[in-house]
Amino acid sequence: MALAFFIAMIVLLTELMLWVGYSQIASLAYIVYLNIFKKEDLVNQRKIKRAILTVRQELARTSPQDEFANWARLKRKLDKKVNELEKITASFGYLKTSFEVKFTSFLWVASNGIQIILMLYFLSTPVFYLPQGWFSPVTWIFSMPFSPSGSVSVGFWFLACRKMVKKVMVTYKDSVPLYYYYAPDSVKRLVTIVHQWCNARVRIYLPVVIAWSKTMLQWCNANIRTHSPIIIDRMKLQVQKIYALILEVIKSTQSSAVNEQSKSSVDATTGTN
Image (cartoon, rainbow, N blue to C red; front, side, top):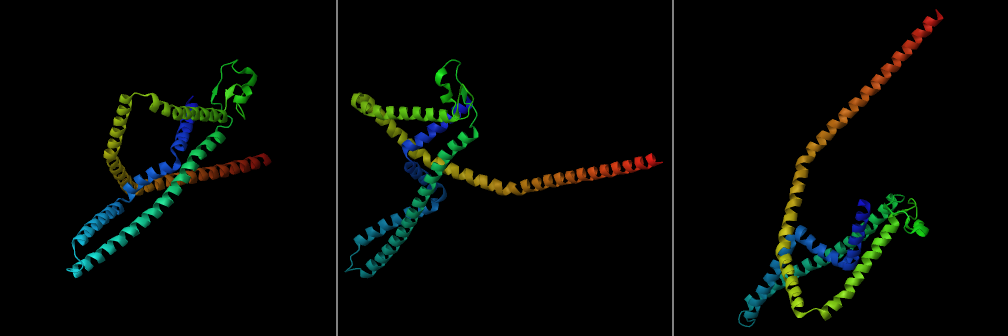
């Protein structure tokens, strides 16, 4: 039953990704990616935006007739900051497009590739056996294409799980309008409060989780760089030991072959005598 549960979880995750949308998941992943790997660029962008607002306020307070030199200096500074912001925004736009395309492709390949690999690997493996006598005229349908008779094949179990998950999602979509129509106002207010509370907690703890993830990545990279020479040395020692063992086996086989040849020659000479 472990295989059946594993397949059901894979189908559930795949259908949830389809229901939410690959683009939405890619957008969330892009935000996480920016906060982990492009934190400095984000901070720089925010600084430039604040600087632009400050310069614009100063420029609005400066008269071009009375303080033309100061006004021109602020204008040049504003143009420079705006150009920097446009460059950063354009680079972020290109990065977002390429990241979302790659991440969406990865999600599609991963979700469909895992299913294809499982179906090919467990092509003739039964997921579970049906009770004897159940669906007796059409039992062979559940075991198609190559599973034993009386069992449920991986392909059929994938199909059944997908149909079940889609039915549940359709039922949920149909029940949401009924909830908004029939639910009391007190329940609606409570759900709204809970939703706002969850959003607030996500905004509070998401930077903490991102910072922790970044710290863990740095720690893993540092440990890999520190321990990789030790691991390589150990692997070299193991390879040398295996090589020495192989040489010993070859020498022993050669010596045994020489001994057998000498024995056979001695036996041949004694036989002739």
